[in-house]
Every structure is written in structure tokens, then in C-alpha cells.
Length: 318
Image (cartoon, rainbow, N blue to C red; front, top):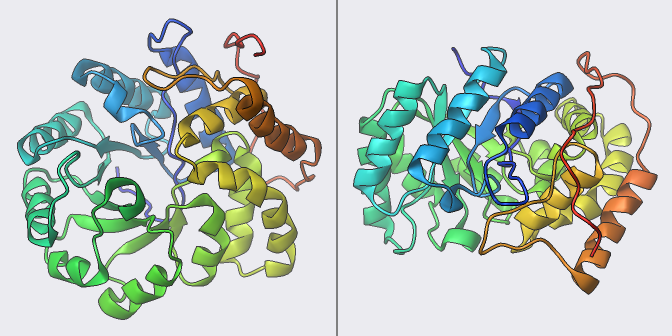
């Protein structure tokens, strides 16, 4: 299908059971809820999807299940996180064969490639597939910065269509526009910079904490791109303490806990990650519960309809 490169593409979690086995039923139920909220696409198996903790076969099962659940209503983007260029090329081909609608490509993991090596990695993977690709730039997490000048060098590869900008410096949106113009679709990649990114010209948002608050997430973006800032600002101020959870090293645990408290899934993660305990758990729950208690009333957005709460079993309090 043709990918509508705009608006909200949630970065989905991979749901697990308490024994760390895949819970595809809950994952797909969450996919359904996000589609109902009005999102434009789904990003599967990113960092939030615990890509590195899954086997190759498990990754294929998750993407296949998401494709089946989406049923052509929105595009499914599969994330490529591999330690070598050869493995990334093979995975890209595999996802194309499964029927994914696009890819999100990260630099090769573990080794910190220099700019020349990074450009060659992106070129080689792009040439291995016909799928459109989002280039993920997150130098804070992965220690490789794909600069605006580097994106200008990659501009000749027509299937590199978009950038997820997660440098943490909102000025990068303007730097990219000044350097490459409208050559790439720009996605905000940091939840607590989403409004600022929209005002500066981002086309979409690959969202995290919105997985627990899908309607509010979608409404905030709609207001932002419509430049209805008088309405967007109060919503963003309510949203920001929750959005800060997306910027911590334990963002997977934090966001999964929020998803659980919102009744949309479970907090179970795969080791070496562990569910939160003691003071840290209490602190994060305090932020989440405050957000839920003060949840703003919204007019219906894009025809979103409420769906049943997740039947996933909740872990006991710690």
C-alpha cells in the first residue's frame, strides 16, 4: 500500500506474558486500539518494541501478526536493528517478503561507525530493498549522528523517504529544512519535543507514551499541525510530564507500565530489563496516575471509537 507519510505513527511495544513469551493477542489488540485512535501507520519492533531482545523468528512473527491485524487499514513499518550491514540487508529483504509496507533503519549496533561507514550502511541497505525507509537518527542512544549534511549526501537514494529525528535538539528540524528542504518527510522522535517540532515544520510524530493515551496523543498532533496553539498548549502541558517518561533509559518499562495502568496491555518486559520496583515504581506510577486523574475531556477525533480494555493479566503491586 501507499504509505501516507504524515501525522502519528506510534512506535508499538511488543507485549509479553509473565514468563517472557510473546503475547501476540494483546499486541494485536493494542494495534487495533491505535488504529481506532486515528493513527496513520504503525512502527513495529523499534527500541520500544524491544527488538534486540527478540530472536529472528520472533521478529517475523510479530511483524506478520501486526500486518494481519492492520488488514491494510494503515501501513506497517518494520524496524531494522542489526549488528552488521549484511544482516540488515537480509532482514530488510525478509520484511519485504512478509508484506511490510516500509522499514525504519538504524545504524548498525554495537560498533560506532564513522560518517563514511554510516553513509555506506544506509546506501547498502537501501539498495537491497524496494521498500520505503525511515532513517532513524538518535545519537544520544546509539552514538552515531546522521547530520543534515549526511542526509544531503543520501538524497539520491529515492527509497530513503523520511527521517525520525531524535537528537534531542529541536533546532535540528530547522537545520534539516535549511539543508535538504522538503526532500525528506520529518518525523518528531522525542515525545516531549513533539509540539515544538510540529511548529518548526515536522510532518509527523513517531510517538511513544501516546500508546497509553492514544486519543489525547492524536488530538495534540492534530491541533499542533493546525497551528491551534491556544488549544494545543494546555493539552501539551498536561501531556509533558508523561512525555518525559519517553526520555529515560528505562523508557520501555515506563511506557509499558503506563500502557498497563491505562488498561491497554501489560508491563512485562524481557530480561535483562525488569519491571520497576520500590521507590522508582512508586514515582513513575505517581506520574502516570496523575495523568490519568487529570485526563482532559476531548471532542471525538477522527471518529475514534472506544475499544474493550486489555484482558492482559496485571502483575501484582510491588
